[in-house]
Amino acid sequence: MLVVLGLLFFALQGCSHDDYIPVPGPAGADGTNGTNGINGTTECATCHSKAHTDPVNISYALSVHAIETLHETTNASGATITLKTSEYTNRTGCTQCHTSQGYIDKLNGDVQKTGTGTALGFPAYPGGKQAISCTTCHNKHSSFDFKNDGNDYALRQGFTPVALDTDPTYKMDMGTSNTCVNCHQSRSLPPTSGDVKLSSRFGPHHGPQSSLLEGIQGALIVGTTPYPAPKSAKHRSGASCVTCHMGKTSDGKNGAHTWHPTPNACTTCHTGGAPAAVAGFAADMATLQGLLVAKGAYNATTKAFTTNTVPIKVAQAAWNYAMLLEDRSNGVHNPTYAKALLKNSIEALQ
Image (cartoon, rainbow, N blue to C red; front, side):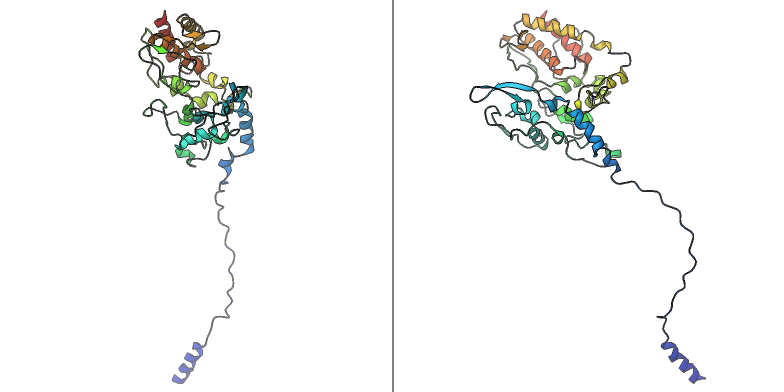
């Protein structure tokens, strides 16, 4: 018996399963299909596609930024020449808003280039390349989590509040409209005392829209019409530059990237027509202009301020006239503030 068991043990030691061939069992039932995934580029293509960019380019071509205002000036030889805005202003003090690279340098915190200008042969930045374009304002997204962080539309300024040029401690925050605020603000402050010598450049500069919308930087002449608190304008809290100037077009020539206000944005809130608050603006502006002419501060023929030295009240009234004129909204941006500036300026000069 022991002999038999021994032989069996050695036989098993040599046994191998390498030649074993498994037999598959029957196929199991199909599992439940998973939820379809989302194409990773679907959300991107909403903006990054010709279907989106072609209409943008068409509307942008109608904007003042694209067309560029023409300016007559004199070159180094004394000859009269005509330049587009981005060339005319390609000089020290203007580049941060009127040239593409100057604006980009401003947002990046880089030092502005200097120069006497294209007309004199020394532009601050390379000539012929400084027109405001898509890449002037847009670069890359700060976040792709639009649901939680908001869509910044790849704007260089994004949602970052804008510090005033005249007071860096004061910051305006208008969301995606901050890009507009960067340049459409007053470049100086109204006079506060003493006699003032005027000039053709007297005033807050050509684009003080956000200042008026915010309700700041006007000359607060004491009068019978009270001034509203800053940031209290309904267009400041209930609308924005983007809402009114980039809304759905009504005729293909306004809204979107034309930045011409679209009536569609107005009628959404003002269903009964223009609000009473803006009534009388044109008549008051005409009255104030007449008073400034009588005080020797304004020339109605050249449509410019004189070079006379005038008392402080006249200078402040002149400032308010310039601010409201250059705002170009006929008081719509901030009707209550605009009316107070006008009424009190008129009172001061009568």
